[in-house]
Image 1 (spheres, rainbow, N blue to C red):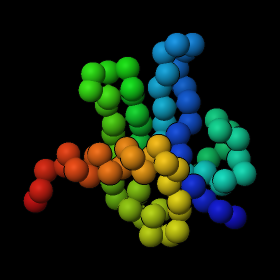
Image 2 (tube, helix red, strand yellow):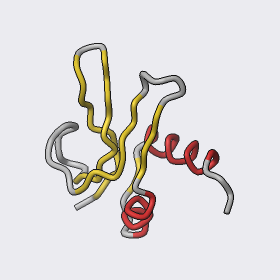
Image 3 (spheres, helix red, strand yellow):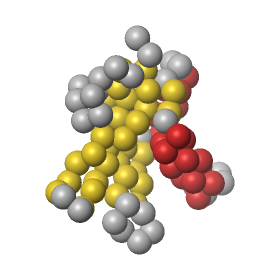
Image 4 (cartoon, rainbow, N blue to C red):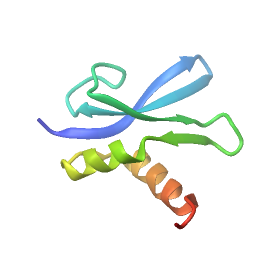
Length: 84
């Protein structure tokens, strides 16, 4: 079972809202998933992203592969995170 971290679309027509989910690669886009690890709201300016960083790290450690879009979101969030 290949596991991916990807977006699942929600919201109304012309008003998208996405959940960042961990799902089997063969599951439907908005279908069954293993865990919700964050959200992405592209309509806000700037786009609002919330992540459960510990869970994202766990799944990446387990071998989950992020899609191109999710990997871009993760890179932006890591760059904007305060250095501590």
